[in-house]
Structures are given as C-alpha cells and as structure tokens.
Image 1 (cartoon, rainbow, N blue to C red):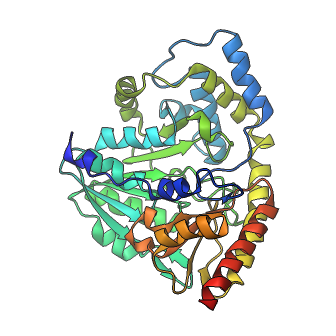
Image 2 (cartoon, rainbow, N blue to C red):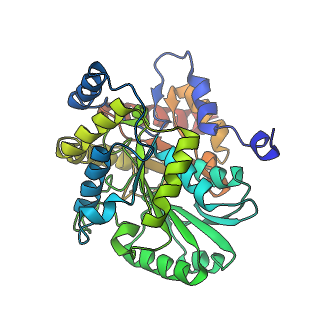
Length: 393
C-alpha cells in the first residue's frame, strides 16, 4: 500500500456519526445534505429510463443531450458567450467529488505544490495529496465569527512554483464567499505565475445575499477569459436535492476536455444513463426545485442562527452561502470530544470543525438544511440544556 493512502485520516464526521448509531431520537445535522427527498418527477424520469432499457454504457463525457442542457444552464447563469461556447467545455462526472478527483489527476504530478484555502471539506486537500503533491494551506481569518480571505496572504503564497490553487466558495463549512473583485485578483495573479485554479462551486446557487444579477454567488466563470487555467466543479447534489445520485460536472478549457474523457474511462467509464436522464429533467424543470429550496434554506438559516447567537458563549456570524452554521462555544475547545458528548448526552448530532482543518479546531458545523425548521429549534433547545448542565458542573 502507498504510504500516503495508509496515512489518510479517517472522517471525523463519520466518527461522530458512529456515536449516534443505534441511538434513538438523535437529531442528525452532521452530514452536508438536506433531509428532503429528490422531487417526484426527477425520480420518475430515472424509473422511466430504466423501464426503457437504459442500462448500457454511455459516452465518457456524458450524454450529448445532458451536456447540451448543462451548457445552456451555464449560459443562463453566466451569460454573454452563448451555450455553444460551453458545450465542448463540459464533462459529466460521477458526482462532484469524482469531478474534483479527475481535476487533480489531470493537473497534478507527484511533488507539485498545491495551495488550498482552508477550512475546507477535507477531500479538497486529500485528493492532491493522494496524487503525491505537496499541499500548503492558506487559512481564512476570523473575526467575531465571520470568516474572510486575507487576499494578500493568499497571493503571496501562490508563486511560479505553485501548480494548482484549490478554493471552495461558497465555503463548506464556514459559509464564506468570494467577491468578483477577489476572483479577478486571484485569476490575474495566477496568470502571472502560471498556476491552475480549481474552483469548487457546488454551493453556487445556495446564496442568500442580493448583490448579484443572477441570484447566485459570484463565480470564476463570470470573470475568466476563455482559455484561463481554470476548472470549475459542480454537482447536482445540493441545488437539485440529488446527493445520493452521484452526478456532477466540470467546466474546463476546451483543450482539456478530451483528456478528462480519457480519465473518466479509466475511473468510472461513464455515469449511469438513467441518472443522467433524471438530471436532464432536473435541469429542464430546475425552476420548480432550486428557487423554492433556496427560499426554504434561507428560512432555516434565519431560524437557526439567531437562536444560536442568543446562547451564552456562542461565536457565530450569519453565513451568506451554503447550508451550514459554523460556530464555536467558549470554553469548549476540543470540538471532536464535544461533538461526541452532544450525541451521547443531548441527542444532538453536529460535525466537529477539526474535520475541516486545524484552523477550525474548536468550531462546530450545523447543517441547517432541514425539511422541518422545528427540528432546528428543538436542536437549539437541546444544546441550550446541555450548556446549562455544563455551567452547573
């Protein structure tokens, strides 16, 4: 076994979830997904595809019809070039995580330097490390619970020796987002250094501010030149309520598309046809899914965050994007131990911040994507009672 694989850390989120296995009545907010099922019409499209016999291999890069639909969707969100511009820049992948791994396989050699903005979903740093890269982390800074980018520090960390920059915004777990001006500055600097940018934008549509023309978070695609060294990863999981379907896509320079298609052959061959048919309908009827989901998530956020902020010793800022409240409790720095205790002693399941990088030690992530906002209120009551009990000790 390769040493880098043997040394991979296990998921601390799973470690906490294991504490809840077999326990009745635990309120589970540890994983990054909504508890709403995929809409009926999307599920029915998959079943119809199966009944039609769509059980065979497809093109490595995805069904032509789905790629066309993704190109049109991309142009609606990022207009100005036309859907035809995007068509040969789309690769359908077996989930967003598969797309991110394909990007690392395409761009990273053993020994390359990779910079990752953290805290971040742990896969983002692990994937280039698996490829043998030397990974350097540039942490966001935090003040009064709000996480922000030190742009000067990031640009200083990216040199001509830096092969790849990986950035996730809107960010999991912090809810931090990038501005268009920051994206322009990053791209301009990376052009000078010859550095690739891998942007994980799977939470692009889960955005709650009103400062962009399309209602989505600012994207690198809005400010990039056609042949910039830029790969953007997307997924059907979050914005279309399709986490278990394992389907995503990459938007990349046209000169990379064929190479990525070859890598898909060696990884998964292709995404299942019936899943792609379902996704095609999800895009066609996306206005029946995403706007309502975002409005509901805003309600969930606006229910949970003030209640948490009212608790003694809680540090938390309102997230602009994503589906997480990221907070810390004064005097409770061992977040992994606290998360396990909350499961056992309060029936409350949260993710430990240390799962997302050492700079997030002491923090907790609460996924607020709940079908019933009352569950969030109940969860805060449990946390409040637990904290009161700790104060009496």
